[in-house]
Amino acid sequence: MSKVLFKVLFITIIAILPFVVLIRFSVYLHATHHFFPLAAILGGFVVTFVILLLYVTFLLGPSKSLKRRLRLLALALLFYGVYAMLYVSAKNTKSIAVSHEYTSLHPVLRLGVSTLLLIDRSLIITDANRLPQDYIRMGLRSNSQSLHYRQSNGYVHALDIRTNGRWGIRNFLIKWYFKAMGFRVLRHGGTADHMHISLLSHDRPYAF
Image 1 (cartoon, rainbow, N blue to C red):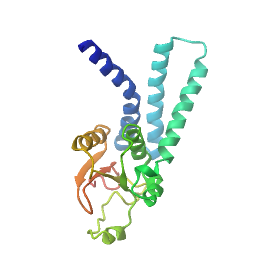
Image 2: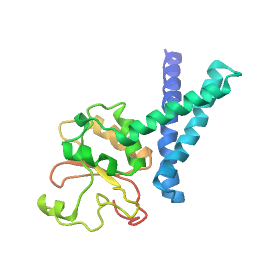
Image 3: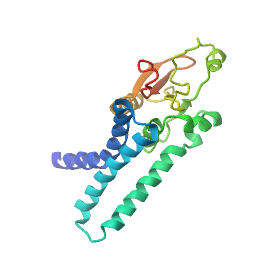
Image 4: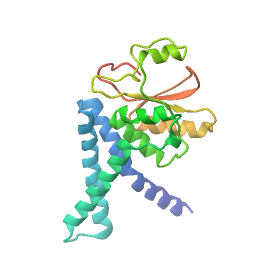
């Protein structure tokens, strides 16, 4: 029984490793080396590409058709990158307005959310891009340091995820998924209980 569990655990780790590396390395390049948004994403994809190439070589062995493998892997990563950067289902957003705000999010943040949505199809994004007047409309104090505002790089560095009506263990796992990937996580109220996910902004390094 223990051998079966070990094999399942090993296969699971091997399967999720490329996604973990893709997101975590992109966050690292952004946070530590100040890479531009798309450059950080590209760096993550390059490292992931190498890992996937090693997987394919190990499983299928050396081959003369290396160029074909490279092209297929590159196309697969390109397809996933475009999907993660541009698409979010309306079922995963609170409103059409939030759906339209999706592309205003920092690409690395979009990558983290899109990857989670492959597992958690019921995830709901409740807020993304905000303006100062939005806080007043919601009956909240205006926050000049909010990462929901567009930063100098042109992107929003925060989003909110619904926690109401979801199992505590599910919210716990989501919280630690984002933390493990290098994002900042806060659980707070405001207009409703929700999880606030943010990516470090070099404009406001101490803001959440």
